[in-house]
Amino acid sequence: MTSKIITIAKTTFLNALRKRVFQIIFIFGVIIILSTQFFTFFTFGEEIKILKDVGMAGITFFSLIISIVIGSSQIQSDLEKKTIYTVLSCPVSRRQYLIGKAIGVICYVTFAILLLSLVFYIALSAKTYSIEKKVGEEARFGFATFAYNVELLKGIYLIIIKGGILVSLAILLSMFFHQTFNIIACFLIYIVGHLTQIAGNLAESGGKVIGLIMLGFYYLFPNFEFFNISDYIAVGKIISFRYVFTVGAYGILYSVMLIYIASELFSKKEV
Image (cartoon, rainbow, N blue to C red; front, side, top):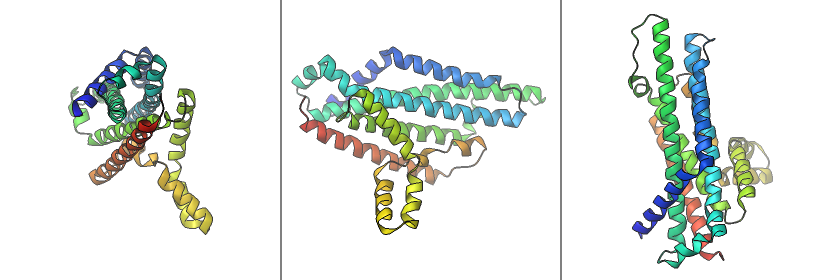
């Protein structure tokens, strides 16, 4: 069973790498991150802050695009090309097929985020190096810039977890919608997911009926605001490992739940 899932995941990952649209998105993300090198009209401290802010925002944005677009296209693409019938005619269950697809897409999104993060690190190292030369300090260009800033690693980790939730959500919604409506629905849920904290506050302060509605809203939708720590990273604040671990566990469990529901629905879906 595990070997079949791994095979499907590997094939999905390699197929995603070959898609030109995602290569274009990735290249555009690299350009955005590298363009921060031209922010030279601020003070030295502000340059680093802006570079961190724009870099993390760029990684978050392009991981959002890739996660939703590639996640929403997997099942529908195989149905349209009829390749799904070839796979399912082998001794592969529908659950194995869907789980393998989800793992393959999540691996691809993780790979893309890590590549963008590497570009971000190089840009940050180059900027730090140029600033040190300007202020007359001993210039150093190396991995120390990134290794000493563990907060960046925490932020990238949470972006990966968020990408996993979005992929799982897109695959689940593909059970109900075609790709275009799926993408729109995912973006709407992403926006709503940043407003769940407001719903939680309304649940506490509102009336009984409104409170119950807001409480259901709060627990039903993923709270993407938990993963948004780029503002803290930009200003140099420390994020506790406990918080990162807790939010990461929340995201992983949420993704597993979505994939489980999708696999149950797909096992009963007519194809």
